[in-house]
Length: 358
Image (cartoon, rainbow, N blue to C red; front, side):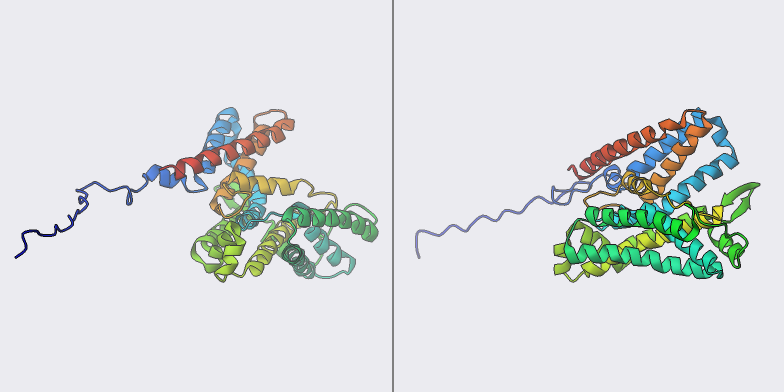
Protein backbone atom coordinates (compact mmCIF):
# COMPACT_ATOMS: atom_id res chain seq x y z
CA UNK A 1 0.00 0.00 0.00
CA UNK A 2 1.41 3.35 -0.98
CA UNK A 3 2.42 5.67 1.81
CA UNK A 4 1.32 8.66 -0.23
CA UNK A 5 -2.17 9.43 -1.33
CA UNK A 6 -3.32 11.94 -3.92
CA UNK A 7 -5.37 14.70 -2.38
CA UNK A 8 -8.84 15.06 -3.84
CA UNK A 9 -9.77 18.53 -5.03
CA UNK A 10 -11.90 20.43 -2.59
CA UNK A 11 -15.48 20.96 -3.68
CA UNK A 12 -16.92 24.33 -2.77
CA UNK A 13 -20.65 24.93 -2.81
CA UNK A 14 -21.90 28.51 -3.04
CA UNK A 15 -23.97 29.54 -0.05
CA UNK A 16 -27.68 29.19 -0.56
CA UNK A 17 -29.43 32.53 -0.22
CA UNK A 18 -31.64 32.62 2.81
CA UNK A 19 -35.24 33.77 2.84
CA UNK A 20 -35.59 37.27 1.41
CA UNK A 21 -32.00 37.20 0.03
CA UNK A 22 -30.87 37.04 -3.57
CA UNK A 23 -27.52 36.84 -5.23
CA UNK A 24 -26.40 39.41 -7.80
CA UNK A 25 -27.59 37.31 -10.72
CA UNK A 26 -31.20 37.13 -9.62
CA UNK A 27 -31.58 40.56 -8.13
CA UNK A 28 -34.86 42.16 -9.15
CA UNK A 29 -35.31 45.83 -9.80
CA UNK A 30 -37.60 47.71 -7.49
CA UNK A 31 -41.20 48.44 -8.44
CA UNK A 32 -40.37 52.12 -8.91
CA UNK A 33 -37.62 51.37 -11.43
CA UNK A 34 -39.85 48.95 -13.29
CA UNK A 35 -42.55 51.62 -13.52
CA UNK A 36 -40.03 54.20 -14.68
CA UNK A 37 -39.01 51.83 -17.46
CA UNK A 38 -42.46 52.29 -19.01
CA UNK A 39 -42.29 54.98 -21.74
CA UNK A 40 -45.64 56.54 -20.76
CA UNK A 41 -44.91 57.13 -17.08
CA UNK A 42 -42.94 60.35 -17.54
CA UNK A 43 -45.55 61.99 -19.77
CA UNK A 44 -48.34 60.85 -17.44
CA UNK A 45 -46.71 62.70 -14.54
CA UNK A 46 -46.17 65.72 -16.80
CA UNK A 47 -49.80 65.68 -17.94
CA UNK A 48 -51.01 65.58 -14.34
CA UNK A 49 -48.75 68.54 -13.48
CA UNK A 50 -49.99 70.59 -16.48
CA UNK A 51 -53.59 69.67 -15.68
CA UNK A 52 -53.31 70.79 -12.04
CA UNK A 53 -51.44 73.96 -13.03
CA UNK A 54 -54.12 75.15 -15.43
CA UNK A 55 -56.95 74.18 -13.10
CA UNK A 56 -55.41 76.65 -10.66
CA UNK A 57 -54.41 79.31 -13.23
CA UNK A 58 -57.68 79.13 -15.19
CA UNK A 59 -60.64 78.33 -12.88
CA UNK A 60 -63.07 78.30 -15.82
CA UNK A 61 -61.41 75.07 -16.98
CA UNK A 62 -63.15 73.31 -14.10
CA UNK A 63 -66.45 73.60 -15.96
CA UNK A 64 -67.66 70.63 -17.98
CA UNK A 65 -67.95 72.57 -21.23
CA UNK A 66 -64.39 73.85 -20.96
CA UNK A 67 -63.02 70.37 -20.32
CA UNK A 68 -64.98 69.05 -23.31
CA UNK A 69 -63.24 71.69 -25.43
CA UNK A 70 -59.84 70.57 -24.12
CA UNK A 71 -60.64 66.93 -24.91
CA UNK A 72 -61.80 67.87 -28.40
CA UNK A 73 -58.63 69.83 -29.08
CA UNK A 74 -56.58 66.91 -27.77
CA UNK A 75 -58.45 64.35 -29.85
CA UNK A 76 -57.79 66.06 -33.18
CA UNK A 77 -54.07 65.95 -32.38
CA UNK A 78 -54.16 62.56 -30.69
CA UNK A 79 -55.83 60.67 -33.56
CA UNK A 80 -52.90 61.57 -35.81
CA UNK A 81 -50.28 61.29 -33.06
CA UNK A 82 -51.09 57.57 -32.63
CA UNK A 83 -50.04 56.32 -36.10
CA UNK A 84 -47.16 58.80 -36.09
CA UNK A 85 -46.01 57.26 -32.80
CA UNK A 86 -46.25 53.72 -34.21
CA UNK A 87 -44.19 54.85 -37.19
CA UNK A 88 -41.58 56.36 -34.88
CA UNK A 89 -41.39 53.15 -32.84
CA UNK A 90 -40.72 51.49 -36.20
CA UNK A 91 -37.74 53.80 -36.68
CA UNK A 92 -39.18 56.35 -39.14
CA UNK A 93 -41.18 59.57 -39.14
CA UNK A 94 -43.40 61.40 -41.62
CA UNK A 95 -43.07 65.10 -42.35
CA UNK A 96 -45.99 65.01 -44.81
CA UNK A 97 -48.60 64.06 -42.19
CA UNK A 98 -49.91 67.62 -41.73
CA UNK A 99 -50.55 68.46 -45.38
CA UNK A 100 -51.75 64.90 -46.05
CA UNK A 101 -54.75 65.69 -43.82
CA UNK A 102 -55.68 68.60 -46.09
CA UNK A 103 -55.02 66.55 -49.25
CA UNK A 104 -57.54 63.98 -48.07
CA UNK A 105 -60.17 66.59 -47.22
CA UNK A 106 -59.68 68.42 -50.53
CA UNK A 107 -59.98 65.18 -52.50
CA UNK A 108 -63.29 64.23 -50.88
CA UNK A 109 -64.73 67.72 -51.15
CA UNK A 110 -63.80 68.57 -54.74
CA UNK A 111 -64.60 65.12 -56.14
CA UNK A 112 -68.06 65.11 -54.57
CA UNK A 113 -68.93 68.70 -55.46
CA UNK A 114 -67.47 68.98 -58.95
CA UNK A 115 -68.91 65.64 -60.12
CA UNK A 116 -72.18 66.10 -58.16
CA UNK A 117 -71.82 62.75 -56.46
CA UNK A 118 -72.79 61.37 -53.07
CA UNK A 119 -70.19 62.56 -50.56
CA UNK A 120 -69.44 58.95 -49.58
CA UNK A 121 -67.86 58.45 -53.00
CA UNK A 122 -65.47 61.29 -52.25
CA UNK A 123 -64.80 59.87 -48.77
CA UNK A 124 -63.85 56.45 -50.17
CA UNK A 125 -61.67 57.91 -52.93
CA UNK A 126 -59.98 60.15 -50.36
CA UNK A 127 -59.18 57.05 -48.27
CA UNK A 128 -57.61 55.38 -51.29
CA UNK A 129 -55.54 58.50 -52.02
CA UNK A 130 -54.35 58.78 -48.42
CA UNK A 131 -53.33 55.12 -48.27
CA UNK A 132 -51.58 55.50 -51.63
CA UNK A 133 -49.56 58.47 -50.35
CA UNK A 134 -48.47 56.44 -47.32
CA UNK A 135 -47.61 53.43 -49.46
CA UNK A 136 -45.60 55.67 -51.79
CA UNK A 137 -43.57 57.05 -48.89
CA UNK A 138 -42.83 53.57 -47.59
CA UNK A 139 -42.04 52.12 -51.01
CA UNK A 140 -39.59 54.90 -51.91
CA UNK A 141 -37.96 54.56 -48.48
CA UNK A 142 -37.40 50.82 -48.88
CA UNK A 143 -36.35 50.97 -52.54
CA UNK A 144 -33.83 53.80 -52.17
CA UNK A 145 -32.65 53.45 -48.59
CA UNK A 146 -32.97 57.23 -48.19
CA UNK A 147 -33.75 58.62 -44.73
CA UNK A 148 -37.46 59.09 -44.08
CA UNK A 149 -36.71 62.77 -43.39
CA UNK A 150 -35.77 63.33 -47.05
CA UNK A 151 -38.47 61.12 -48.55
CA UNK A 152 -41.34 62.64 -46.57
CA UNK A 153 -39.96 66.17 -46.92
CA UNK A 154 -40.24 65.71 -50.67
CA UNK A 155 -43.79 64.40 -50.29
CA UNK A 156 -44.63 67.32 -48.01
CA UNK A 157 -43.56 69.85 -50.67
CA UNK A 158 -45.34 67.96 -53.44
CA UNK A 159 -48.62 67.77 -51.54
CA UNK A 160 -48.40 71.38 -50.40
CA UNK A 161 -48.04 72.57 -53.99
CA UNK A 162 -50.67 70.20 -55.39
CA UNK A 163 -53.19 71.18 -52.70
CA UNK A 164 -53.00 74.85 -53.59
CA UNK A 165 -52.59 74.56 -57.37
CA UNK A 166 -55.31 71.98 -57.99
CA UNK A 167 -57.79 73.74 -55.70
CA UNK A 168 -57.30 77.03 -57.56
CA UNK A 169 -57.54 75.25 -60.91
CA UNK A 170 -60.75 73.40 -60.08
CA UNK A 171 -62.64 75.90 -57.91
CA UNK A 172 -61.03 79.18 -58.92
CA UNK A 173 -60.40 79.86 -55.22
CA UNK A 174 -58.09 78.75 -52.42
CA UNK A 175 -60.95 76.97 -50.64
CA UNK A 176 -63.43 74.31 -51.68
CA UNK A 177 -67.14 74.87 -52.09
CA UNK A 178 -69.67 74.18 -49.33
CA UNK A 179 -70.92 70.59 -49.54
CA UNK A 180 -73.38 70.68 -46.63
CA UNK A 181 -76.44 70.29 -48.89
CA UNK A 182 -75.16 67.26 -50.79
CA UNK A 183 -76.41 63.67 -50.53
CA UNK A 184 -74.80 61.68 -47.76
CA UNK A 185 -73.45 64.70 -45.89
CA UNK A 186 -75.54 64.21 -42.76
CA UNK A 187 -74.57 60.55 -42.45
CA UNK A 188 -70.88 61.31 -42.92
CA UNK A 189 -71.07 64.17 -40.44
CA UNK A 190 -72.60 61.83 -37.86
CA UNK A 191 -69.63 59.49 -38.21
CA UNK A 192 -66.79 62.01 -38.38
CA UNK A 193 -67.94 65.25 -36.77
CA UNK A 194 -71.04 64.81 -34.61
CA UNK A 195 -71.49 65.56 -30.92
CA UNK A 196 -73.37 63.79 -28.13
CA UNK A 197 -74.65 64.89 -24.75
CA UNK A 198 -73.03 63.79 -21.49
CA UNK A 199 -74.60 65.34 -18.40
CA UNK A 200 -75.62 68.44 -20.30
CA UNK A 201 -72.17 68.84 -21.92
CA UNK A 202 -71.67 68.41 -25.66
CA UNK A 203 -68.76 66.07 -26.38
CA UNK A 204 -67.34 65.60 -29.88
CA UNK A 205 -67.36 62.12 -31.39
CA UNK A 206 -63.63 62.47 -32.14
CA UNK A 207 -62.94 62.02 -28.41
CA UNK A 208 -64.51 58.56 -28.57
CA UNK A 209 -62.64 57.66 -31.76
CA UNK A 210 -59.39 58.86 -30.21
CA UNK A 211 -59.78 56.54 -27.22
CA UNK A 212 -60.90 53.63 -29.41
CA UNK A 213 -57.89 54.02 -31.68
CA UNK A 214 -55.58 54.28 -28.64
CA UNK A 215 -56.95 51.03 -27.21
CA UNK A 216 -56.62 49.31 -30.58
CA UNK A 217 -53.03 50.56 -31.08
CA UNK A 218 -52.08 49.39 -27.58
CA UNK A 219 -53.50 45.94 -28.27
CA UNK A 220 -51.62 45.72 -31.57
CA UNK A 221 -48.31 46.73 -29.98
CA UNK A 222 -48.54 44.45 -26.96
CA UNK A 223 -50.57 41.45 -28.09
CA UNK A 224 -49.89 40.82 -31.78
CA UNK A 225 -47.06 39.57 -33.97
CA UNK A 226 -47.27 42.79 -35.96
CA UNK A 227 -46.55 44.76 -32.79
CA UNK A 228 -43.41 42.69 -32.26
CA UNK A 229 -42.40 43.43 -35.83
CA UNK A 230 -42.78 47.18 -35.21
CA UNK A 231 -40.41 47.09 -32.24
CA UNK A 232 -38.01 44.81 -34.10
CA UNK A 233 -37.64 46.94 -37.24
CA UNK A 234 -37.31 50.06 -35.11
CA UNK A 235 -34.59 48.53 -32.98
CA UNK A 236 -32.44 47.03 -35.73
CA UNK A 237 -33.93 46.28 -39.14
CA UNK A 238 -31.02 44.09 -40.25
CA UNK A 239 -31.33 41.86 -37.19
CA UNK A 240 -35.10 41.83 -37.62
CA UNK A 241 -34.75 40.73 -41.24
CA UNK A 242 -32.29 38.01 -40.20
CA UNK A 243 -34.90 36.41 -37.92
CA UNK A 244 -37.65 36.52 -40.52
CA UNK A 245 -39.42 39.82 -39.85
CA UNK A 246 -40.91 41.28 -43.08
CA UNK A 247 -39.20 44.66 -42.80
CA UNK A 248 -40.51 46.17 -46.05
CA UNK A 249 -44.11 45.12 -45.34
CA UNK A 250 -43.96 46.45 -41.78
CA UNK A 251 -42.55 49.85 -42.70
CA UNK A 252 -44.81 50.37 -45.70
CA UNK A 253 -47.93 49.50 -43.70
CA UNK A 254 -46.83 51.86 -40.91
CA UNK A 255 -46.71 54.71 -43.43
CA UNK A 256 -50.14 53.62 -44.66
CA UNK A 257 -51.44 53.80 -41.08
CA UNK A 258 -50.32 57.43 -41.01
CA UNK A 259 -52.24 57.86 -44.27
CA UNK A 260 -55.33 56.37 -42.62
CA UNK A 261 -54.99 58.79 -39.70
CA UNK A 262 -54.63 61.70 -42.13
CA UNK A 263 -57.79 60.57 -43.93
CA UNK A 264 -59.81 60.33 -40.73
CA UNK A 265 -58.76 63.75 -39.43
CA UNK A 266 -59.26 65.23 -42.89
CA UNK A 267 -62.83 63.91 -42.99
CA UNK A 268 -63.45 65.38 -39.56
CA UNK A 269 -62.28 68.80 -40.71
CA UNK A 270 -64.32 68.65 -43.90
CA UNK A 271 -67.59 67.65 -42.23
CA UNK A 272 -67.07 70.02 -39.32
CA UNK A 273 -66.61 73.15 -41.44
CA UNK A 274 -68.23 72.04 -44.77
CA UNK A 275 -65.27 73.49 -46.68
CA UNK A 276 -61.47 73.24 -46.66
CA UNK A 277 -58.73 75.85 -46.99
CA UNK A 278 -56.05 74.46 -49.32
CA UNK A 279 -53.14 76.17 -47.57
CA UNK A 280 -53.75 74.67 -44.15
CA UNK A 281 -51.87 71.80 -42.52
CA UNK A 282 -48.38 73.20 -42.79
CA UNK A 283 -46.62 72.81 -39.43
CA UNK A 284 -49.12 70.34 -38.00
CA UNK A 285 -46.75 67.46 -38.70
CA UNK A 286 -44.40 68.89 -36.08
CA UNK A 287 -47.25 68.95 -33.55
CA UNK A 288 -47.98 65.28 -34.19
CA UNK A 289 -44.32 64.31 -33.92
CA UNK A 290 -43.88 66.42 -30.79
CA UNK A 291 -46.91 64.74 -29.16
CA UNK A 292 -45.35 61.35 -29.88
CA UNK A 293 -41.94 62.41 -28.54
CA UNK A 294 -43.49 63.92 -25.41
CA UNK A 295 -45.35 60.61 -25.10
CA UNK A 296 -42.06 58.74 -24.75
CA UNK A 297 -41.29 57.67 -28.33
CA UNK A 298 -37.66 57.95 -29.41
CA UNK A 299 -36.55 59.39 -32.76
CA UNK A 300 -34.11 56.47 -32.98
CA UNK A 301 -36.97 53.95 -32.93
CA UNK A 302 -37.60 50.70 -31.10
CA UNK A 303 -39.07 52.30 -27.97
CA UNK A 304 -42.41 53.80 -27.07
CA UNK A 305 -46.07 53.06 -26.49
CA UNK A 306 -49.52 54.03 -27.74
CA UNK A 307 -50.68 55.33 -24.36
CA UNK A 308 -47.86 57.87 -24.06
CA UNK A 309 -48.95 59.90 -27.13
CA UNK A 310 -52.48 60.02 -25.66
CA UNK A 311 -51.12 61.91 -22.67
CA UNK A 312 -48.86 63.93 -24.97
CA UNK A 313 -51.85 65.06 -27.05
CA UNK A 314 -53.79 65.84 -23.87
CA UNK A 315 -50.95 68.10 -22.72
CA UNK A 316 -51.12 69.95 -26.05
CA UNK A 317 -54.87 70.39 -25.76
CA UNK A 318 -54.62 71.51 -22.15
CA UNK A 319 -51.93 74.10 -22.87
CA UNK A 320 -53.66 75.35 -26.02
CA UNK A 321 -56.99 75.92 -24.32
CA UNK A 322 -55.58 76.66 -20.88
CA UNK A 323 -53.75 79.72 -22.17
CA UNK A 324 -57.02 81.02 -23.67
CA UNK A 325 -59.10 80.34 -20.55
CA UNK A 326 -56.41 81.91 -18.36
CA UNK A 327 -56.65 85.10 -20.41
CA UNK A 328 -52.98 85.05 -21.44
CA UNK A 329 -51.54 86.15 -24.74
CA UNK A 330 -52.00 83.16 -27.12
CA UNK A 331 -48.71 84.06 -28.79
CA UNK A 332 -47.07 82.24 -25.87
CA UNK A 333 -48.55 78.93 -27.01
CA UNK A 334 -45.57 77.88 -29.15
CA UNK A 335 -43.18 78.88 -26.39
CA UNK A 336 -45.05 76.60 -23.99
CA UNK A 337 -44.91 73.79 -26.53
CA UNK A 338 -41.17 74.24 -26.91
CA UNK A 339 -40.67 74.08 -23.16
CA UNK A 340 -42.90 71.00 -22.94
CA UNK A 341 -41.01 69.25 -25.72
CA UNK A 342 -37.57 69.98 -24.32
CA UNK A 343 -38.70 69.09 -20.80
CA UNK A 344 -40.23 65.82 -22.01
CA UNK A 345 -37.04 64.81 -23.80
CA UNK A 346 -34.95 65.51 -20.71
CA UNK A 347 -37.41 63.68 -18.45
CA UNK A 348 -37.50 60.68 -20.78
CA UNK A 349 -33.69 60.61 -20.84
CA UNK A 350 -33.54 60.67 -17.04
CA UNK A 351 -36.27 58.04 -16.75
CA UNK A 352 -34.47 55.67 -19.09
CA UNK A 353 -31.17 56.08 -17.27
CA UNK A 354 -32.83 55.58 -13.91
CA UNK A 355 -34.70 52.52 -15.15
CA UNK A 356 -31.53 50.86 -16.48
CA UNK A 357 -29.35 51.72 -13.50
CA UNK A 358 -28.56 48.65 -11.41
